[in-house]
Length: 523
Image (tube, rainbow, N blue to C red):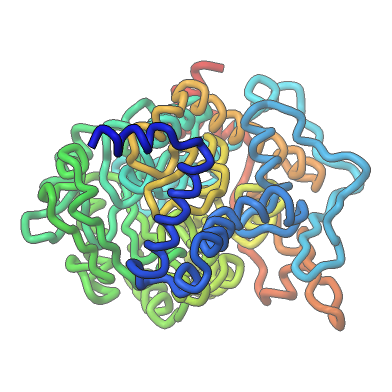
């Protein structure tokens, strides 16, 4: 035995390498049966799998050009990163975008832009840009709410995002007056760091879940009473990433903390069904909305990705007849979001945001209902130019998810569904998320939102308006095709946005229902 050990101890380093390769070759040829390439080409076949694993990174950093990548290209990501860090986010030598490309957006500037008077609120508060409508005003809810920011954090739950990421986002919105949508994972301690909160639940009813997996009104009332940070309730009907599909949270991922927050059992798989238990028809949905609003006093809204519009037609008919209904509607685009989904859903189910939003807004416009609803857009709208088009089409606020993630460090690695997010944003790995500096990242979220609002205001003023709610569909033009060339979006989508009542930003500043008080007091 001693001689045997002495023999191996005397082997040079290259012999150890050769021995290792021989063992790998034996394993490839005789033991493993899963990979034909490794069997037919032992050792070197592994190179193919390694190159494939780093392919996205190679394309992202060395192959794709600045405008080529999806879902967000390098120019878009760089603008968010620079804005979040208060760095130079300008570009020189003119745009490198093909401005004759299909669907390119043009915002029509005025000959003489809007000039702020001396006493204008934006002199003292340069990032003040609230929603022009008050959630719950029409339906006379007991606790109406005017979002203090027209850009806010979209629904992303604790579980899909890390604790450090959620806390960074909530502290960030508190610094810039925005609100933070909880996502359907329930209200966690990380959502309660000072920012306004929209409590969001889906078919799993996490956080307001009864023992049988249904909805508990009693739990919702307690939750709202104990957490004054909750300003509104959002019921998720569907989402852009996977409309019409439920989710599965494996038991292995359910920690004691997650189990307590979501109201589920430790170690057991939790299945979110594709549809709700609390209602199954549009009249039942209306009753559900009104019962929640009555019990909590809060504005209540719905979120959906758009496909068929027959049930939206039924909802509009019922709202017209009864004078009741949701206080806000969030339209999610089929572009997908942070929710992991099969490619068949992410690629093909539900309409892109502009198509879906125009279909629904037009429907409510025909019924004379748009004045009573706050319309929220969600679907890659976190850039001032795209936001201008959204407001021209009828949006009153926008929610951003992936853009907010990028502001706190997401690098678009596109591994959100694997729990191996290298930036610590979309993972429950304690090690990976330990790299997130929460005070720093919260500042960056706030800086991104503030930069967005500043540039959006500048675009608004260039168009001759004081507030983005004044945009109409003749103010924005898009390239259509080679025959029709370019047209304003009123002709493209065949409707004109209803005029939003607007007097002055000073009126919004003095509104008793204005959210984001902490941010305003700090300025």
